[in-house]
Length: 580
Image (cartoon, rainbow, N blue to C red; front, side):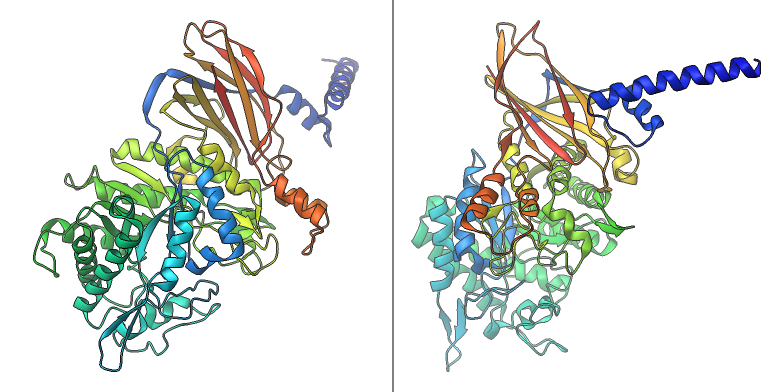
């Protein structure tokens, strides 16, 4: 080619590129360079296919479990506001787990600490039981219509054994709060078992046998790390006496554990395995009978970091820990069908560590937290199906903190009475029901790839879906581990298998992103006030609700199929709810 022809060809390319750029700007794709404009123009929409005729298994409401360290927050201003909202997000009962139900103290909450003072010894060494504070907590659960997931812990002061090097009962945050004697073994296991029997008998008397029979009783919290100042064998003995006490008061009670940490570490995996061995093969230290086990619990967590000025999530860590636990349970034919409750299932470990303490925790205020959770919901079902275990719950260790400012970066569902974006993904999950059905996406990151490398290259643009009588729902997301600006994904969702007689469906399209269902964005736009006016507070409250992306609309069905096009921003989640 001659130089003149090369020049003419180049000029033609430039001319065409200029026309493309103008068109892109006309349609809102304003980009900083010609090459990016061409790339944006050439972007192929992500094709998501939902096949209602291909069921995968039941949609278990695994999302309906929540928990927190500070049990005394239950009866405080914003705790009492939040509990009814948790009840209302699900068509089935919501369960609440809290630490420190048996801890000694005055009932005043601090970060990572609460107390109830249910047990003490009189001058003659005889037990004294006082359920005044726990009654207030459980009464509030009853009033809100939620059910307790009763964690049996921690050790009352007068019952705690002496452990070398442990010289305080309570250790105040930011020191290591689990370092005190409240996490010691009991000095008298029979007295511990009797405390549990008395406690459960009191619950049965106050709330009724039928009601308490629907609750779960979990023994302790994370006994494989510093929450337990004893050996695994001592925890197994604690478990035996606790479940014997529960069953003595309520023979059909649901009891389980061990609430250990993520089993992908050698220590935690060995602990979970040894606990199941103990339950399967040993006799109870309390009464020499077979050891009850009605559910299995452990705690998978992610691992976010702060990289080059932005948050990078560690979803692979939570997935790996979950799979490791499922593999251990699947080794036991006796237990493979027991409910598994991930009684803390979170992007990382410390709910009370704000983003001031750890900048990576700033993800908690943003839509990223919600989208991460949506990805995890689907992935957990996939891991369950692979291992053929029975996943009953993924408990979000998040509630609220009473005495701080707005949006401090604690892992919370609401901040001073204002709902945060994360709460809305659980509201979305409550709109899924019936059977899980087959989905596929040209933008999906396969589970094995996500478990190996996270989502560090292309985003995960994917969906999960359900079908029930006269309705279906599709949860759709655009997720990336790195919380950086990026173009929206253009998505076409095709839904097939709608009943042949249906001619129209009603679409309700909900969205969580920087604009919708996002109180944090509204608060920042106001200038981040820590003392908002009543009008500003009302605006924040309204922005915290789950919002429709557009007005509900009736769509024509053709041969059992519809197609919905949408633009999905990075770190956004949609819920398309169809009714007919």
